[in-house]
Image (cartoon, rainbow, N blue to C red; front, side, top):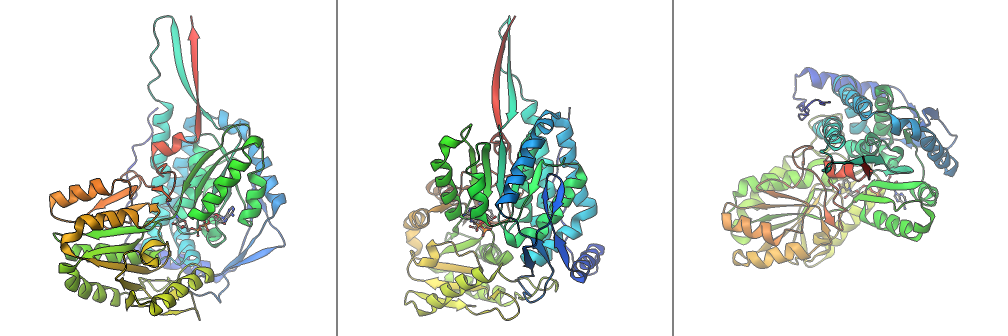
Length: 525
Ligand code: NAD
């Protein structure tokens, strides 16, 4: 069988006057016009509870978009039972049929649900139209189509060699048990990719998204159902993370976790799994993409104007809430004055506000907890002697959780905001002496425990080579003369090592291979 050769979904710009802009605006009005009541999905059934949580846009938190049913341990158990009940039929369905279901899901997003999905992401995750287009609709479509093509390759691999009288085979079996997909708030497409990539390979899944992403998760689930994902194959529950974990990680049929989220949560989960290892039938697969403290390093030979564009886009798109966001930058003294002037002008041109006004580039941060955390860092930076806020620094939560795009200049390359993941629109800059490039490479490598993304801007070929070698382990996605965000499925497989994850590249064949357990068969004639 040949599956369609994937290409990246074309991205709509939503420029003024376009038909797409009008359709997206309509979807936003439609979503605003009624209060939605979101159920969980267990064994194909919509499950509601009396315990409800309110959904509000982070940029307009007094407005109620609707509510969702919050589950408890009973629902987690039901979801696991439903998954295990669906397992036999699903794993025995020929892979071509599973492929067809997920290709159909991609088509449904492209042709029918694009605006609804983007509107949900814009409203519940406070993402502007363009960011929603690339990070939810297009990336989700790409994940599905490219993963189907990798899946086909896996199932159609060349068999092992067989000498005369022997037939050797390699069978790709789904994992024995259920998979737990635990997903973050910041990318609708990542949330959808974690359960679907496992399900595609014949596994059954219990999926728990972040509470702040439930609205768009619900749209995805409707799409997966309409595409033909059978009842029980993907079960979507909303509940307290640790409570869900308590049931999942104590279950003998727990076969693996596909996680994206913070490093602290992943490390806690890893330890819990380790402590429970004797309870499981098999060693569970542990795949996690976690935090980042992503860097941009500018060399004196750089095209400094391109570097400024890369830095401000990398730092402030989606309010710095991409795991790949640029949050620490190293600039040579000779370029600093010109770069500073352009950077401040660029940032001053950003409009901040709600997502429904398409001229706003910067929107709100995800919730009050994140707002308070960021405000604390800013207050501290205002007091510290080795830091100076050169733009932004203000915050206001009257209407929404707004943090001004902020640049901190520090004389201390190990200043707190150079080391810790803040997850907000805060960029810290350290200016180095031009002749200290080599020492700066060492600083970049050693300053943070993470290794997700990083970029170097340089025209000098030797400097590019030097940075590529010295920073080999500092980033799983390394960019030369480009911003450190915006990996495209099929083009730049995404993921980091060190404290940033297990580096099982999302949207790549290597990731799908984590969700199968090969069996070698030798038959002698
Ligand atoms: P988070 O770690 O707070 O939450 C992730 C998921 O885990 C959520 O569903 C949450 O409810 C659940 N959870 C939280 N504590 C739990 C516990 N003790 N037991 C079980 N489940 C628990 O992350 P977030 O705030 O939603 O997302 C932001 C984080 O994700 C950032 O650190 C970011 O860098 C990271 N991220 C990484 C990548 C990547 O590819 N490396 C991509 C996106 C986001």
